[in-house]
Length: 284
Ligand code: NAD
Ligand code: MG
Image (cartoon, rainbow, N blue to C red; front, side, top):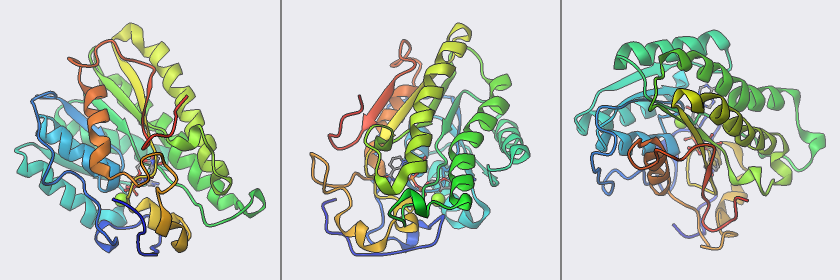
């Protein structure tokens, strides 16, 4: 999808149906090849954007899927669940604000109950705020929301999931091009994504002896509700233009990386890596 996009704005967390154009999550294009047959996956932030594309792909690859999301995103979560069920798989809805440790445990427990266990954890929920120019504009509320959503929740959800994960399980964290090329307006967010890369290496080292692989996907500019909900409206007009491929990516274009990393057949010796899906920007 090539810029220019129409300028647009929503309040966080943003909804899919209010985007112009509506993103492509692979609804009509993703073809599964039984690469995740019988696997049980929890995708935080699975209602929309990258998480929805991953949910569709995982279901068409044969996985049952639990979707974490914020209560105000119910309509997006239900749309994603319907797509999972259309693929003939089980969808479990586990709403809750992951900035609360207790809620993180409840969300994981709901996923485990609904799916009958857990094999794949995708720590995809994330938040940024980019409507500012300088570190002087970063509020304490922004800091709390970004750090709690991107880092605390990742640790809490992983802690809650670990007792349920067995050898062959896969954890996939969501990093960002911002870990490598941080924007001035995203100082706090970019730092969480760099920390997520570090945590990915830490966790891979700790969990390797248990046969659990831990990796990350680092997206570049992807057309999702997060962008109109958190960027200045005019910034969206040229969104993705500065990549070597000259355009923003669609959520659908990120799904293959997650399927690969989740697959015990195809990525059995892949751990502690960060896979870039950036339109050509380097992730090293
Ligand atoms: P998105 O808004 O569709 O998905 C983010 C999801 O995070 C939301 O749907 C919401 O359900 C969840 N979330 C946010 N705060 C939460 C909270 N407190 N409790 C529970 N859930 C919460 O946007 P997306 O772009 O698909 O984002 C998915 C991931 O991709 C994020 O980690 C984001 O940082 C990362 N990412 C996105 C881009 C991009 O350009 N879109 C680029 C790099 C990385
Ligand atoms: Mg959403």
